[in-house]
Image (cartoon, rainbow, N blue to C red; front, top):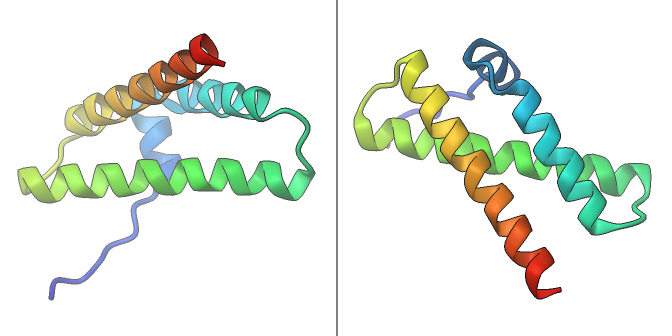
Length: 93
């Protein structure tokens, strides 16, 4: 089994220019959830971060390496997909 390296997600988001987009996604998710406690809000944001980190790790393993450009593309695609899921949820709900 290979070793697992923890990604520095805040740094990746900063370097790729996707931090603001991630924060906007988090805000949108919080708004759709309604009234949450501070603990529930934090848990939701941390779960988003974990999902994104898992996605980036999977993509890197699939490709075998990752440049900053790759990380940016993969992050943006993941955020776009999450936003689309939110919009679909609003359309049906």
